[in-house]
Each structure stands twice: as C-alpha cells, then as structure tokens.
Length: 111
Image 1 (cartoon, rainbow, N blue to C red):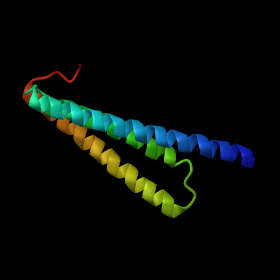
Image 2: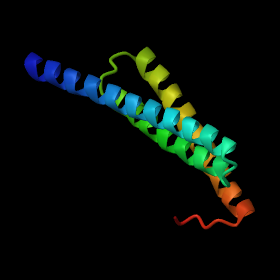
Image 3: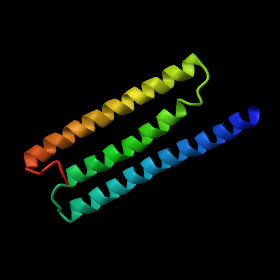
C-alpha cells in the first residue's frame, strides 16, 4: 500500500509541476507576443493578452486542483482552497474583461 501511495505522490508531483510550468510558459509567451504586438501596432493586443492570461491561469488552477489530492492537514487544505478561490476569481474577472473588450471592439466571442 505504501508503494502505491509513493507512486501516486510522484505522479501527482510531476503533474503539478507540468501544469504550473505550462501556465508560466503560456503567460511568458503571451506577454512577449503582446509586447511585440505593441511595437507593430497590432489591433486587439489587450484581447490577445487577456486570452493568454486566462489560459495560463486555467493551467495554474489545474495544478492547484491536482495539489488537493496530496494535502494532509486542514491547514494545508485551507491554504490550497484560498489559492484556488483566488485563481478562480482572477479567471472569472479576466473572462469578464474579455467579453467586454470583445463587445467594445465588435468581435464575436466565437473564434
């Protein structure tokens, strides 16, 4: 039984790292793309950056949800729950901002 728990712990740890790194990479690439777009005077840069941030936060949120599998104390559960709530709120706000930017710019929400 301990072997199965150890294997699960390793798989979850790698999964958390994978989701976190993917989120960071997406955020960095979106930021670089936005900076380049500003210099090229591309339209809809804010919207592209917001989409990148929402995607990155979704991966980071996935990592936190996966982290809930390995928490062992109520203190850890409370910390992870607060992080999940904050990231979910940020994701909601970014999606709300995207919707309003698309309405202002006359862009369809369906791409």
